[in-house]
Image (cartoon, helix red, strand yellow):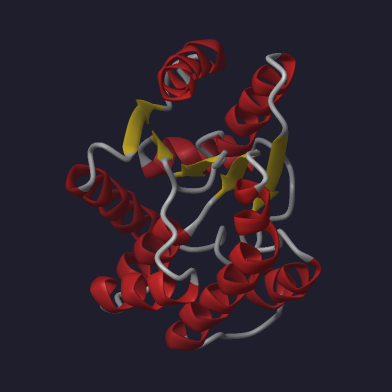
Length: 206
């Protein structure tokens, strides 16, 4: 039996972690074995790469940034995601390759097609069965993020224009692959969003 691979995407501050945690709890209550992970940082090596990417002081060249994300993703898929799927588990990841296309491709103004091809090569063409895109305007997302009181990381400190470009890229990706993406208005209540996600996942689980 092959497993189910679900990813959560969206700009910072839209509530990905909250929704992913609620879905994990729901699926485990139904008796499914769930692996909850994130990018970057889902493995020991990934955690070290995450520190370089998000907490290192100073500039990181855009192409270097894109390649570091791809390196993290290659190891993540090979050592955690593919083995879990082969065991029939549900894998829920907070971010995956669509984040690289949106953040590095659009936000950093690199070639989005090239960033996607690098990511696909890194993961040997593994795409999620379902990608949940939580969509929210950049200003509201930033307000939510700021209200948490946590110190913003290197990416979270970017200007609103960066996140507006990233949001537009996510929506374009969703438009290009409507069968894989579930786009949800993240201005709704946590409960309403989760109900929509569970409905879609239940149809996939049969």
